Length: 201
Ligand SMILES: N[C@@H](CCC(=O)N[C@@H](CS)C(=O)NCC(=O)O)C(=O)O
Image 1 (cartoon, helix red, strand yellow):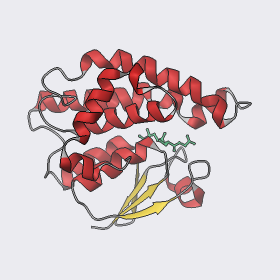
Image 2 (cartoon, rainbow, N blue to C red):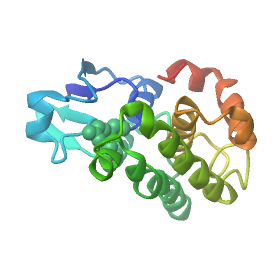
Image 3 (spheres, rainbow, N blue to C red):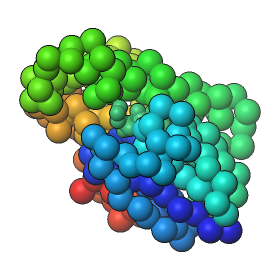
């Protein structure tokens, strides 16, 4: 199976999938495109002209959530999901909270649609505030059984949550404003296999 992965720097949806591929030590061909201009090929195969785009033996797949589930199915070891059905649903709940309820509203093209007059720099504080507010809202749902986001193991939920936390920091939120997330990030980075596969260090 040949995996080609279209990726852009600073794209947290791409970082989610890179982390999964690295953690599972799957071989892939990485094609770097620009976030502002994803290029003809991605425009053709990704309905919203967004990254990530993954091709498996030449067949295109968009949407990081679909990719995450596909990767888990083709490479169940080391696991990033639980076998228990309710625990699996809880992992998806947190991934979807990030993917569908937090991320899209601060996406560059979304903000640009409503404020075409804003520069990239002008967007930053608004995007950062949105992430800050919503990470605060998500917090009570996290770390209820251990230092991992859901349950007692490293899962897809940790990847989705910690990557969007790092996006908030990159956009200007001081780590001291989200201390519980920062403590969590430091915990994840203290685990060798997790740190070594992480694409945002
Ligand atoms: N729901 C999609 C979101 C994809 C997405 O928003 N990608 C961002 C990068 S994280 C992007 O391509 N942004 C460029 C743009 O919005 O034009 C997924 O999970 O793959």
